[in-house]
Image (tube, rainbow, N blue to C red; front, side):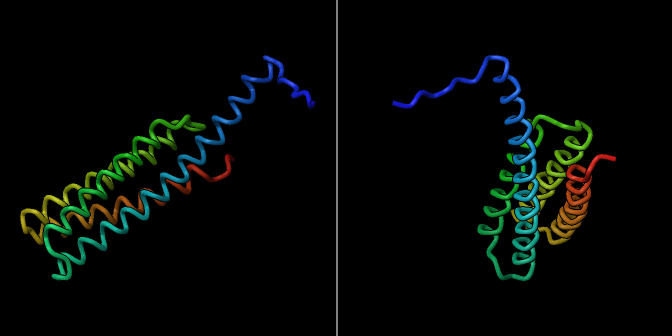
Length: 143
């Protein structure tokens, strides 16, 4: 019979801290990538509606789903333990902007407003750039 050594109690807080910092960074990375791909899907879905390739009910439903996915990703980023609170908050703000823009796109589709949808797409694209910048800043080596 093998005996399993138990870690000392002093070691457990260090282990918990190490695991939390790894999972936090991984969560931010995963959620940021999810947000980037979801935002691109929102742009493509709204383009499909504008071109007449997607019916309103489909585009609206898809955009609602994208907005909810983005809002959830934003909450996940916000709840991650920050190694740098300012950098984490910049990422969360960019994801929040994406979610809001996707909701505005959904509302524009439901109202049949091409111009409003164009504005929402511009907001999506600007927020995508903000997300890319915040992501680079978050994961860049500290100087």
